[in-house]
Length: 447
Image (cartoon, rainbow, N blue to C red; front, side, top):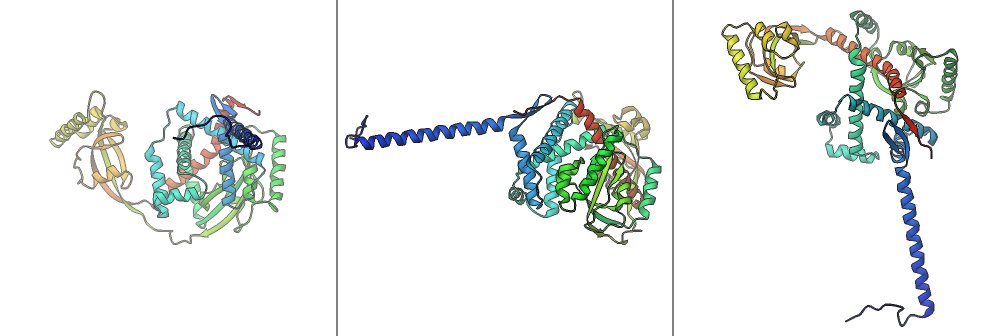
């Protein structure tokens, strides 16, 4: 049997023994150097670069954001700005994300998984690809599915925060809608693919600040002769879309802010507007492309059925189970069919906003809600539905009238209202976030 031998190997010369020892020492030195460098790299990634309230932002977070920005420049064939410009921009975005997520947590604003799933499904359906193909495409772009999901969660959270603090409090008058509709009627329904640079004023700008920012805007306009619009937008723009090179996307001319429309009149694809000013800052707009829709859609009717509906709604609780609630609603249905007054029962028993109106929720167009559509398709006028469930609770409904209307003008007005709310929300969000940031504790670590 072979026995382990300790000490120098008998047939090895003294010179060979010294060589072996030197090799071992060299390998040990290399191992120590590797471990030292690895430890330093890990320590560097874990280094805290900023603290937002109590949440740290690490160098790893910053590095990940910078790499993501560099991939964006590469994929879009944009010359990237200097590294310190990218790092500053990414750090600002990380601070904003920390503050928005903390605000959402404080106010119990949550994103459900099905909200994210629906977005992904819309993307895969519209591109006619499978989920696996979608994941592969993300990998080819240097991203990951998990990163995409995280990004979508944040975008939905941000939208909900904006809605809670701003959009839901905005009121668009009928006069404003009418004025905007009159303006739209004079506009050829072209689609504009646009990008944008905003040099934002502070909430109460001084004359010297305005002068300084006007000079900056003039400099940017001159630089556009030799530098890419996207690069300059990334570096200088204060608009939310600056991280995408100022890209606003494709919009009908009437969907653009009125001040944009006035300043892009006569511009062709590839043209850049002159510098122009609004109450919140200075703007430069680039027309990437223009697609003409023609006028074939004008005058088309959009006919839908509308139903005058009333309802009784009950909700489950610790006291009443779903079985209890369904039994009660069935009893109410029998009573009303035998002569009891629906309005009185709704006022007495219904647990939703319409109870004070005797359950009346007004005229509802088909297509408004999938649950209502399904039940209405089974009913005749004045017939009462069986109990059915929605996100609000358990319902019985009855429609007392039905009519067919052309909703094309109503749809236009609704879209105008949404567009105006979105436009004002983005303008007001910047000031709202500036106040949120002022009240936060933010510490930068430069070591």
